Image (cartoon, rainbow, N blue to C red; front, side):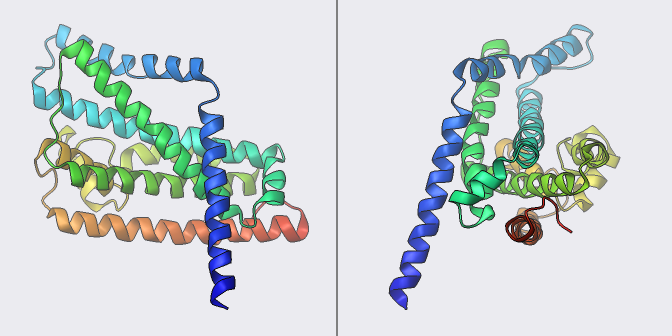
Length: 272
């Protein structure tokens, strides 16, 4: 009994490793595209900051520059996960790739998590590109106040976006018309997701304080810059983040299981 359980666990980890490796190979199969994204992605923010400074609107101190950098990384994570990873799952569903994947993987959830791990590694390039570009353009050498907490916040933010983007993909495939869900996501997520620093206005601070999905990104800025953005202890912010991530994980698992069972038993895409 114990032997069969160990064999099952070994099989799951083997399939997960295969999916991670497959995802990394695909993501890094076009190096020219990667280089273009790394070079061009940070430029819009740099030009925006330089324009503000040219008009005397913004004083570019080290704190402000680092605040912009971490806000930009939050937006990069959001756009990469939602429109990269989430849209990729949708395309796999529409093009029949998921059926082929399910022929080699016992559980569709393994495919999603494996690709999510690969994509989380890939998104670290966004952070590297931002750090390098800010150093070249502004001479900014970032200093991180709490590296352990920053790492925890990036992991929580990536897990949260993995689960949200998968839920988004499942709903879009079910509706077969993604504009409704996409419009809701692209307007609500930047506002409710904690991507905008609380310093922007008192209304943004209120949203960041009461939105459960905002805390990982708030903690990211707090741990990097060494200040308290919200009037809530860091331990409580971490607790709220973990509860939110676990809740999103459970919702994702339920939706993927329904999707998996329906596709295997009836050969139909969707949840109902």
